[in-house]
Image 1 (cartoon, one colour):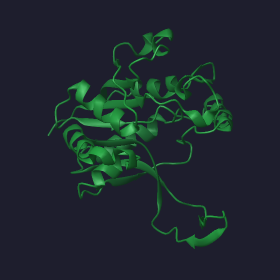
Image 2 (cartoon, rainbow, N blue to C red):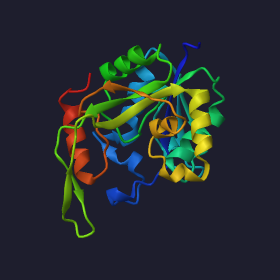
Image 3 (cartoon, one colour):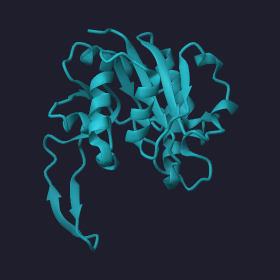
Image 4 (cartoon, rainbow, N blue to C red):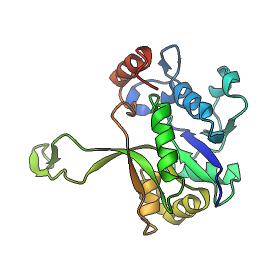
Length: 233
């Protein structure tokens, strides 16, 4: 089996919940575009041979930034789709990876991925038959809401994990899983769910809450604090 590792970052979305005309991945975070931080960490990983960033066909922002520090690994692909699943599938096809190559799909909006988290994911999954993902056990009490936004009941949290990225699978199996989703790709919210639909069981690799996804404007402030005070290592 292949020991080649590649990263793929879908970055064709608009990030409408951030309330900005600028796509979320280009919002300023610590003096750099949000996506800069994730790409820098991935490109710095010695195990990763190339980092493919999947952009919208009409993206005019990416080329405006200085990517010289990642020039030897970073490969932009202007083939983004309407959904995350479409973007990842398009990126896999455009990258022309071998079926046995490992691909790590990571959110552009998770800027605080640490080198340690990334190395741990690769170390725990490189010999795994299926692959898996970074995740965190659910700690908070979960409430199921009814139509009136009142508590219908409390969900049992035992055994529940909150999925993160990167999510690491063989390129061929992941491409098959996403292609099989077909018209149902809109319901595929991450790569693991597509893999699960094939009857496979991805491994959960313990992470921590620092690897969170920037979704709302206030999240940028927390991410900047983590980056500023050197909590990412």
